[in-house]
Image (cartoon, rainbow, N blue to C red; front, side):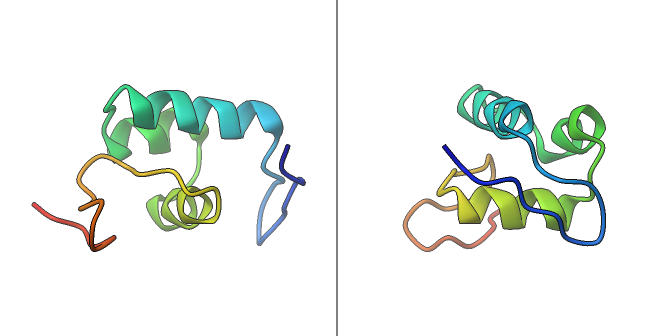
Length: 67
């Protein structure tokens, strides 16, 4: 279980983390994630990296964005 983290905005809740995991595993776009989570792309990418969640469009071997 992750600790709520607040950086220049509101805290990430366990519900937010679970939604991020669910959308990432379903291959949802980062754009959709920004809408559903109400957070900027950079914040979502940072949280995903912190939680070791691979996002769609990310090369799993290099951790670089492709496309």
